[in-house]
Length: 368
Image (tube, rainbow, N blue to C red):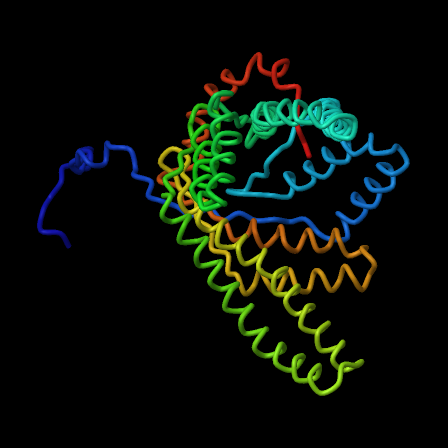
């Protein structure tokens, strides 16, 4: 029994209210992994129909094929429980391809007709490409959305000419020693000028990190190249020294095949290093991305994919694309600084307003 007596009808005393309880609950950082649900068997049907119709229409249907392909990829790419959407217009893509084909054929015809005319055509082509890439970036991002909010690209033509014309020319003049620097500037331009709704992406990858990645990739390639030459080159030379015949020819063919295979496998290795570098230095507002690709896994996927494609005479191609794409996407994650739903809700109205009136302007895609 209680030692105190409360008179009947008296309400229970209300506990004191702390000031902290009146503040909004703090939502800490969260990690949202990307996922990809596409399947090779599903994509095979899209791929084979796209291929057949593109052949029958002499390539005209390829614009519609691209839209079907991208819609499938976007619809099956999910983060935080929602997939992306692609809204591209096939007619705009077809325009871009017609312009590109006209430029290429005009350039080839001009050189065959007259060297001076060919040089003029080359100059026109070089001046046109940065503008085409700039418009293509606008088209691609504007026609991509997530939860009803469009992406966008705010970069101007001047920036495009700097990173897609001036820097490549300087890279060529320096015998490609500026390649990592140019690559860093291109990615900085692409990411810094991109936006989601009213929130902008940012990129802080340094020039030094690009040079380091290129040197690591080149070092691994050189080490493998030397190991193959030492292991197989000596055998080939010994066989040729004894008697140049079928055995020595086979030894040299094996050497060249091994070097070619190693060179081919360097692409997924380099792709892995670059994807991790680029996305680990990319942010969306206060949120940042992470990529955790592992090059042994990527090299295994690439190696088994090429075997499958060769054995099936190309029919394994859509399955190979799905395998590689799934690994790239599912290696990505978004590290949200706060509640992602609140972030998207805050930007929904602004993002929709920012995209109004742009559909007429962004009706062109390079799409090569």
